[in-house]
Image (cartoon, rainbow, N blue to C red; front, side, top):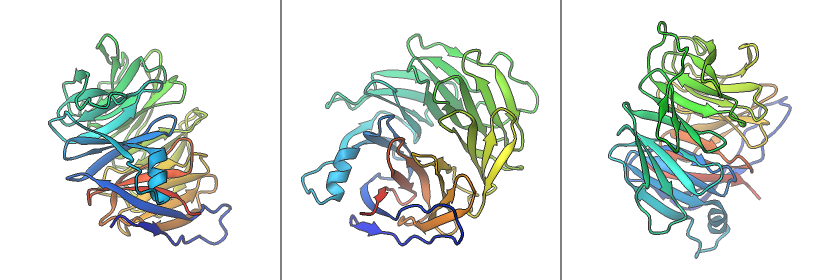
Length: 337
């Protein structure tokens, strides 16, 4: 079960780019469904959160050592238990050894992973709702929370104060927020909502500056992430489409088709160079990749999970990613040698 699986990648004819072959290895298992994963900004660590309420922290160099055959390597370096309900999302502080988590127990918790004996949070924010998604501001001084409440919650990390957008519309807004993410500079942030809308907010004033309603038809939007230059947003919805939006105009500029997603709250992501878009096909249990520029499907390969992965997350600095399964497993993917 823990052996390396080398994939046979099927490339679409006539595509402008091809993604290298990848191999994957099962690193660990939670006691229940693995619901989320996140890499640190420097790519040195990633964490996973499970329905079993646990958080596992892995050191990427040690993962590579293990995959290369080092039997002494121990990539799982911390396990945290401090939530009472399943974990929804994770994020790393941009400059320090702090990992935050959000869960169905309405809490956001802060863990210092530099302390080898620390198993519990040193700081807790108690929200009024199930906290479905979190995102640190690039300064580390603020964090966003997307909850079952339709309005994003903005927290001051030092004072515990919570702020709400001043101009949020009272009508036409309903449903939980599936994902919140800051842009690379923090000048803007985004929400992906169950009501089918993508909303953009000014990072300073917290005002809603653009709302794209019915971004995925009548289906909920499950994820939304910025490009590094903050010009575009990549969204995923339960209508089985992935879309690229121009922030300045709110116009859809690309649509990536051919991967079914109707049940899981999965996401679509860029690879580290933003040349490719990657997501999951629930029906075929495959990882699917498109050329980001042409929207051609360029590769697909078996996920090697027993059942479709619940989540996929790519390193921000190199060509590695992780998938998390309803089969409880965590798989690490890297380019084949």
